[in-house]
Length: 330
Image 1 (cartoon, helix red, strand yellow):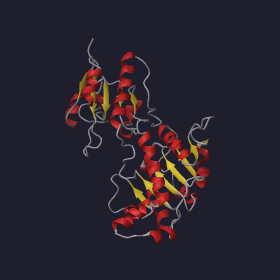
Image 2 (cartoon, one colour; image 1 turned 45 degrees about the vertical axis):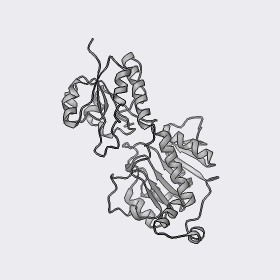
Image 3 (cartoon, helix red, strand yellow; image 1 turned 30 degrees about the horizontal axis):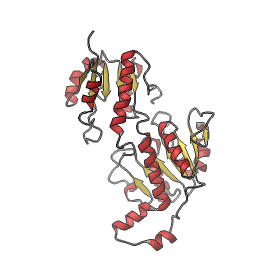
């Protein structure tokens, strides 16, 4: 029997999302009967795509998909799969699995980090530090006021693995957690309540902290529109670590400049990197981070553990985990 061929292609021009050296060797040792290919660059990956039954990473594109005649399964280490949802892929029998869940610990801790920064005005203290200014009086007497998390409401849009991890940590800090999701569960834990998407406007009006942890799909693009931003409390803070497309960025800038909401923490933006001319860079009530909420010390280890479990299941003919609904987009 011919060996199963896996093509690994996880390459990034910025070298942030590159598979670390040695991890593919570990997979080869764990699966000695599997043939692993690791192209050096995009051109070589295009040449090797016809050989692959399994792809780990981003070797497949609309331009080369027709040549991938042996392909049966693609595993990506990211949660988002947008670049792979071209029509031919969506209509095909190729199974697509993603990395949802492996980012949950890091993204939850990132969320609580920015929430605490706003509550304790740490971002403003850091800005003052850069100017060599001791601002005790301004920080105590000036807006915005210091906050206590206990008794406040954290609204979650999206309640998968990331949302659940955020809810657990938020509850531990005394926040009331209300989540909106497509299919609310009878048991809302670890949130206090789970609501259907039809109650999103109500959640937006109630939340002191509105956290977006939903994927970018046709249904969620522009979800937080100008009208929805107008529903937020004047003291509310928006936290987006889902996708930049979830928010109407121009409307958000207007709301921040007009003081209609208190602040925003953005790990994702409509265009990445964020345009150097964007007003968001210079707003003191905005924390911009460069799409790092999913990065953590065990990111690649968890990625390979997930792929190994799925590869073993694939070889054994068992169902895979994290299968993406290609038509829904997640």
